[in-house]
Image (cartoon, rainbow, N blue to C red; front, side, top):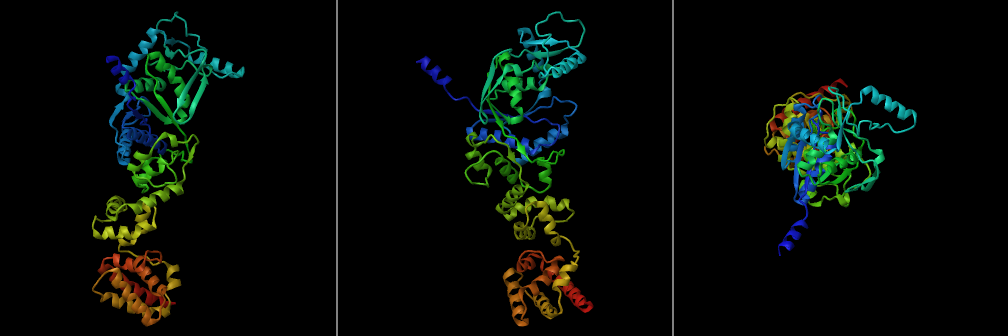
Amino acid sequence: MLDDILRALTELPMSVRVRFAPSPTGYLHMGGARTALFNYLFARKEGGTFVLRIEDTDLERSKPEYTQVILDAMEWLGMTPDEGPYYQTQRFDLYKEKIEELLSAGHAYKCFSSPEELEADREKALAEGRKPMYSRKWRDRSDHPDGEPYVVRIKMPLEGTLTIDDMVQGTVTVDVKELDDFIIARSDGSPTYNFVVVVDDATMNISHVIRGNDHLNNTFRQIPVYKALGFDIPTFGHLPLIDGLSKRKGSASVQVYREQGFLQEAIVNYISRLGWSHGDQEIFTMGELESFFGFDHVGRSSSTFDQDKFLWVNSEWMKRLSPEELAKRWLPYLQEAGYSVELNDRLIAITALMRDRVNTMIALTEESHYFFTEDVTYDEKASKKWLKAGGLEGFGALVERLSALEAWNADAIEAVYKEVMAEFELGMAKVAQPTRIALTGATTSPSVYELVATFDRDVAIARLQTGLAYYSEYVGNA
């Protein structure tokens, strides 16, 4: 009976624990955000744990402000970790302990080769057409010089192959002859990435290491470290890289796209499709992603970052949010642009009117500027085309009747326009375009009835009257 219980326990599936481990040496890049998202979605789909670890051992380049930017971006995108953040700089004692453990067990060794010797070995290998690799001259030596600086190197296997069954790339095998006895501790005692990442993942019980395909070579360096320390080897998944992202510092970061007016839903939606698919569906909520995501639909090939497609996804999300919610999110952009506005029915009405015409919050601000300023500059080309003598009398009647209108809504305003058009035998453009010029300065705007109705009544009438005066003067000077 007891044997049956123990057997059943050992056959239970291992709890999924994944991690996202950015370095705080810059903003959260979109590629990093995609890696974080796939880890997050896998944890949610499997009922597992999503861990955030800050890999801040690069003391010269790591900055606290970058750490905060990363944390803020993760929160903004809705990828709140279940554990963490943990910081590598708070774990140096553990790394030192494990390095000593490897040295004592004979799985690592002290290397006293000078930089000049290493460079000479490298040049010799290149001259002989060989891959530059450390000669391993100190691998089995015990005649260590007293007081001389040294690094610690891991003893890699000397023959055979290493194989991983990758969640994305499939079965991948390398010959150990391609692997070097790499440094796990520098001469100042600080540990290196390929060592600390193993210690961290193992001691944090990470079951699945999901990261970019650029780490695939690192994985084969890390597997012997797992084995030497007696750790279980996790399951690996190496995601395809993303082509087309800008290489300029910070320009392809979540922070920059947020500043440019992209919604968090759109960013999550778009990066989820960079390497993963679910039929022909393009627009996903976070809940749908958590439900649908799986590595059986993550491809091996690189994905291409398409800015036009990204803008389309963002425009779709701007339409999907309620006008109230979109107006709430728009408010900071308007304030940043210097407009004195508050969240009210008028702002919500402007949002509902304008959102279908733009694809970012910045564009929404720019296209809607005439609602938030008293200054209107009349476009000369538009004036020349549409302010004709034949339409002046009708436009004057329109302004007069709108000024007397009591019910200020699109239906009532439309009725006035149709009445004037019929009476003066004018086409729609001959009254609509002068209206747009009067209210906005140009002729590009939404439906003229809704445009007029969205303005505060007194503001609209004042602008129409000023526009009528300009129209009359323009025709008189023609």
